[in-house]
Length: 504
Image (tube, rainbow, N blue to C red; front, side):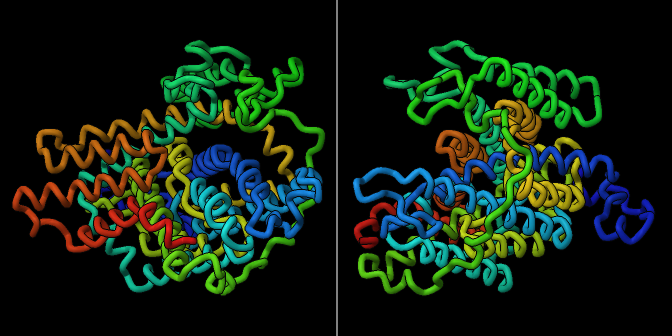
């Protein structure tokens, strides 16, 4: 791969737009950017349906949904109408915040990154934080987390940590994310799943076999993207998603398959989105915007000050390093990194991401962060912020056309994620496997991301082992001081369960 610093920078830009987004300098063109932006949007669009199912269905400590309505009636039954209202409100706000912040990433940071509510972060908020306080108070903590990260950018600390990471670990992060998104794709398509009533952690398909129409859609999509890419067809990834979605919609219209239930019933159903809809347009409800209590969480009798600090710390560290991993992976896939492994406009990228965290809290949709699925758009040709503008416009349109967006099933997008994982694996040859102190931390980083289902865990494990091995081999002085700080922070992050009594 050719690092961006060696790209011919003498090519003349054709106008202000070209110069600002560096289209010619990065060897791209508008057509590639549009295709890449659309692929990224389609790969991320599931969050419009998934985030509401997490944020919109969990009650807070008072038993209220994020809409402010009660979750249960007097007899202890779930109030379906209230849950439906809550889900719709979260969906509209999720698409709005993702659209605005992704546009900001494109125009200001000029980097092909999509922004949306972070998976994992939203689950932490819904199932750990909200049960200890009201939803507005929980969102207040998310805003504080975003403010703190923004301050770390302004002070230069976040950028300095980014630059302190050694090249071997940066490569390992990109490779690990490749495996991670491959695993995500296989899980989302039901190709790999946890078997019911078995001690085996995961299995292939259903009882070791590919059964059902959704799995066929995945297989056809994977074969299609492979063949198109091998034949150098432009837009191979986008074509694959569109064709697979059309096939899925036809199958659902004829066979009426329906969704796969959370309890495992209808195992041959669609995994996330059912490719069918009764309408095209939905009117949004933005009532959740600004429904935030910035200081209420600190006065909770059942949560100590240390407990609040630990909750913010958990949000902050996960967000901090998820973004770092994603930025590195996307830059490596698109040859956008310089000789030191840094992307262009790093400060702007990190600042927009930090503001996105706070915006997610203000929008009551959880912390927003950079999405690793952006690598699929880069694989489809995206190199500049124009792709992010296209992705952002997609999210804004989805506010009104969410039923249409939700037609795209995960089985149609999963083949692209798996294929992009393959492309990212090619960087593994850059790691010096003969040097233990480099190879072992890199290996741990790579394997822990998919096995722990967390980018942050993989980065943390690799960082800690890297520092330990350097010290025990007498090379402590060669480790950047910030790596020691980060390694210690990760130790606290990994053992935060020890402090759980302080949270109550």
